[in-house]
Image 1 (cartoon, rainbow, N blue to C red):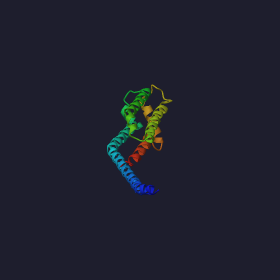
Image 2 (image 1 turned 60 degrees about the vertical axis):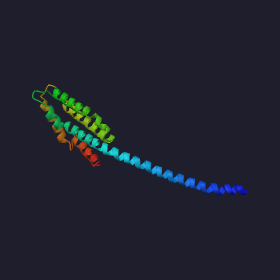
Image 3 (image 1 turned 90 degrees about the horizontal axis):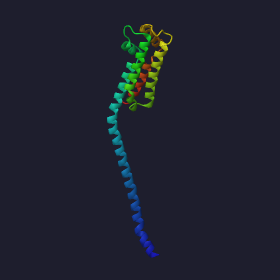
Image 4 (image 1 turned 90 degrees about the vertical axis):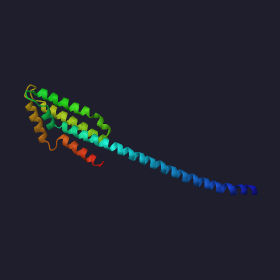
Length: 173
């Protein structure tokens, strides 16, 4: 029995020191790991933030380019018919959108949904304004109808999306 207490007298302090050392070492390594993760995240942000801001700039440009007023100014020419203008407007909208598809990687899902919704609303606007017009009528009739419809609404779809983009970008700055 005496030998048991002799052994316990040496093992118990050694066990306490081992446990204390284990917890201190574990705490130290956990803190170092967390510091590395934060440093990695910080460095990543330095690289990603400019690219994300560039994506927002490109989406802003997309919205400006597919706004009804801008589309009409760029697409309409002398001698065009309603059908030709409608076709050109829809082609430009599709091309502009397709050109900026990759930007969805850098923006929030909500932002991308707003961009898609804006594009769909503008396509609907062009198609609904062309309904009821003679396909061979002068393109100016379609242009006039689109602009009147846009002016009748409080805010056009691109203005709403631009406001959302601006608000989201302010979070990065």
